[in-house]
Length: 230
Image (tube, rainbow, N blue to C red):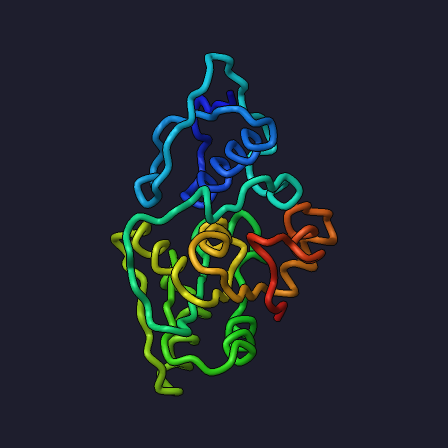
């Protein structure tokens, strides 16, 4: 049986990827799996599959390194959303990540040109869902002004409910994504979406042989693939 004894430090998206690794490994070996409750699991219909008392501990790498190469069960079968939020047809989610990214890797804080060009590339849509953990970002403020000028409908994420934000993002038809695992996870759960990523960011990660981004640029898989690089 594949076991997560405890979840490592990290935000919601990291926990989703870590749990996914456990489920993929269990499916690969046709064994059961077990994890403790984790913050955010209430948004999904998930449960343990305890078949025997033989414990295998899940090992590193624990995030995206094996996401594309070790795929044995579709992510949308693993992560089934509970609450039936509704969004208008052809809604586009836009995710901005700031806060700790400024110190972790400033290149991961994407500039406004990426967002404006991605909006243009996606094409006509009336409803934009904007999500961020950092409302002081210049890119966030400038995208809001741009959409207001175009007369578009903007729905803002709720600062008090990260899980509601995630649920809404999962149900949009497209995502202008960021390097955040929160946005990436929303891309492979719920609707199959048109995923846009920053070409500058992905090329910078490919240059240092970051496996998740290398695999994504090479085509991804049925759960998560690029629609456009901008």
